[in-house]
Amino acid sequence: MKRLLTGIGLTILLFVPAVADAQILVAGEGPVVYGHHHLNTTNMAAQKKFFVDTLGGTVVKIGSGDRQQEIIQFPNVLIFFHPMQAPMGGSIGTTVNHIGFSVPDLRPLVAKIKANGFQMITADSVAANVKVTGDIAAAGPTTNIAFALGPEDVKVEFVEVKSQKAPIQLHHIHFFGQRNTEMQAWYAKTFGAKMLPAGPGAAFVQDQLPGVFLNFTPSPAPTVGTTGRAIDHIGFEVKNLEAFTKELEAQGIKLDRPYTKVPQLGIAIAFLKDPWGTNIELTEGLVNIK
Image 1 (cartoon, one colour):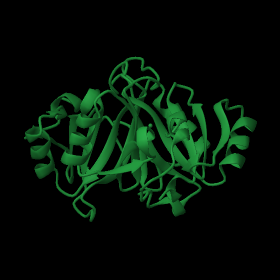
Image 2 (tube, rainbow, N blue to C red):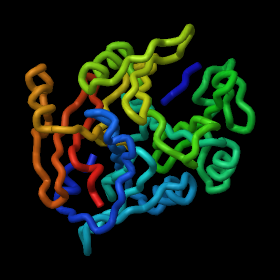
Image 3 (spheres, helix red, strand yellow):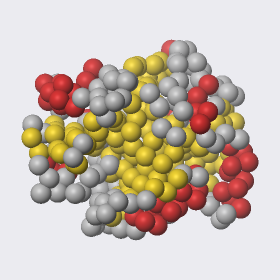
Image 4 (tube, one colour):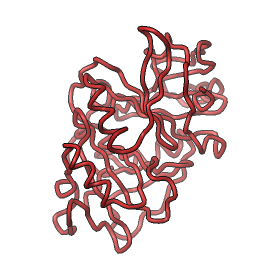
């Protein structure tokens, strides 16, 4: 089965928080956890219709006056936007093929996605031998999944976790690459993620950090980096970020933006790219923004 699974950046440097309750609930469970997605968009109304009205995220406003910005929060992930920045393409074809959420019940969510005018692409996202009924795929004896296209072709997967108490939360980031096992090893080494053993016939390999799976599928075609695309970059929240960036540089990893304090928010940031072009922001203190 072809199961497919950004930061704050310079745009936030000018902002002072007005209201926000960060939802990175697993921040205390490890030195590195997932923090945020950062999307390019020209249509915030459509983004809010999808991520808030349809999926159930919460709008949070930061900044004031003409510097005010809206972000959307879910348990264990914040979504930031580069508003008025037209993406050069959707997430499909990039190293970050899609983002994933988990929900207790897929049926009402799929019905709401379609009722709100968004496209389900489940049948196009799984292997031909996987049964799809009502835009929901039987990914395993006890696992159902579904796929949708959000605004500006951001691909999103939904995994049914019947025991989950939250109505929706972060589940995974799904990378595509022709060297997927090398990607898995790089993220495990760089961020301290746990490499999970692959089951027989598994379509992808996985790492795990608190609150999120990092999935890596072998891509049949070359992929491109994320910068400028619908999912512009992904973000990790790191304890003791300054020391962490020094360790990265000692390992020969080049930073696109060095460790930088953002006193307006009481946070610090840094940027790098993985060897395949995924744009990555590192933050420290994002979880404390209120």
